[in-house]
Length: 185
Image (cartoon, rainbow, N blue to C red; front, side, top):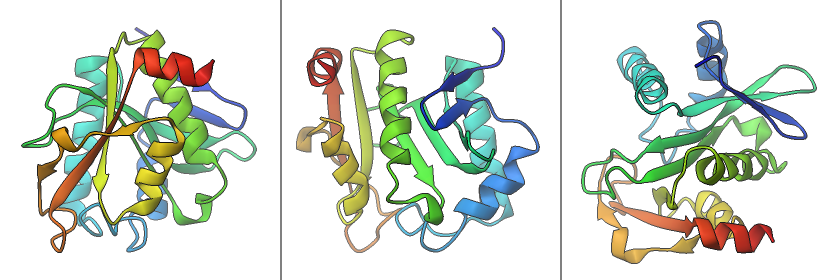
């Protein structure tokens, strides 16, 4: 099928290469970035995450791709698509997600990459609807979901204490293909 690569104005979303992993983990496996993602990962958790990301690509043709900044080749994190696999969640639904290193926050990179990922979800991968998941206290994440035109789906929320034990609910936002097209007008 060839290597996946998609460019936006400032970013490249692409397949993972072996040399990406140390740079990715160095930038994103920090207390601030991992605050709502289960905490800093040990070697076993990192290996498991890598296997899952590569497995999504192998099994579905998409994953949370490497997010590379065009200007300098820096790996800012990941963004992309997978099939929801969280126990209790909307299993099998197309899910958009992102994780960026702290020095890339607040510059519009996540929105730019997520917009590209949603375009791909609907145009290339044939999704009818895409969900995004976070915890209620991760206001930056669900704030971006709202800015993307996604709407809150309390009917899809589910309990999971892995990410925020104090508020053990995963909240869900979604957008349909028709809503996305209207928003992109």
